[in-house]
Amino acid sequence: MVKENVRENTVYITSLKNLKDFELNHIFDCGQCFRWEKEEDGSYTGVVLFRYNESWHNVAANIKLKNSEATIQATKAIPVEVWENYFDLKVDYGQIKYELRLKDDKIDEAINSGEGIRILNQNKWETLISFLISQNNNIPRIKGCIQALSKNFGEPLGEFMGSERFGFPLPETLGKLTVEDLSECKLGYRAGYIIESSKQVINMGVKEFFDIEELDEMTAFEKIKGLKGVGPKVAHCILLFSFKKRESFPIDVWMKKVMADVYDLNKEKEIESFAKEKFGRNGGIAQQYLFYYIRELENNG
DNA sequence: GGCCAGGGGATTA
DNA sequence: TAATCCCATGGC
Image: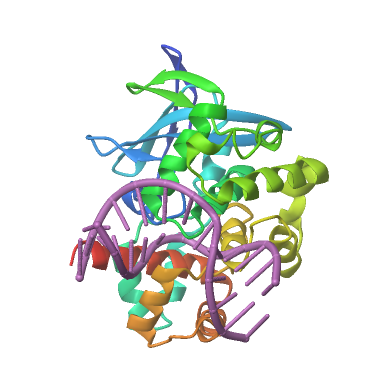
């Protein structure tokens, strides 16, 4: 994929070419991320937190897809490899879909509804906090909480695409807060979890937290679950969406619904072992197709 | 292992 | 106006 960064009125342009299995609606609306919003022209605008070269980079960005080329405008120059990794471009989703479709015609139909899904490689810290907020919560409210958190405690990124943008707050910032400091973010009982988990990440060291990626799935799961407020559901989301553990199969109320409707499975344990056996190492990706499929079905009849 | 409080807001009854 | 629901977890 050829790409170049061109400076243009303090906006940095990156293009990603020859994209396959890539649809913005599917990627940003399959429940994996909370900061991208759709514009009238079909492009998406959001704020992304990266960590590379041992430092944090919060960037406001807009991504527009035309045919098989995506154009990203961003407030900072982010290496194209970093964007490629974010959108998981090294992974051949065509092959994964081919393998999954062979399993049965139910997953085949689910894939048809969200063919352009890709699992983003999101920042591990941001994903931890985002999914702590997600528990027993709905997507519009999760987005509101994260927005409030960023507005109050994140780095101001200036105006971009008609709105003031704010970076995702960093561990040192959140770790120093009290529950009262967070009251206007309306996080409810999750505020305490966020503060405690932030302290735990600071104490273990950001590097060691990120290096959990190197551990095997079971060990990584236990490590993540050791953070305050992280149970099995949230741990699976964090592992899938930011630690590249693609076997992880998060089971929430939507997944319970789709697995009951489609596969007539009603117990969580049954769903778990079924997913492991049926989808194996692609469990997490199958989960995203199923999640998108049931949400589409419920929203559009 | 089962139960229930934890917050807050949108939606439904 | 009241009940229910939401990408759950901790503590008993």
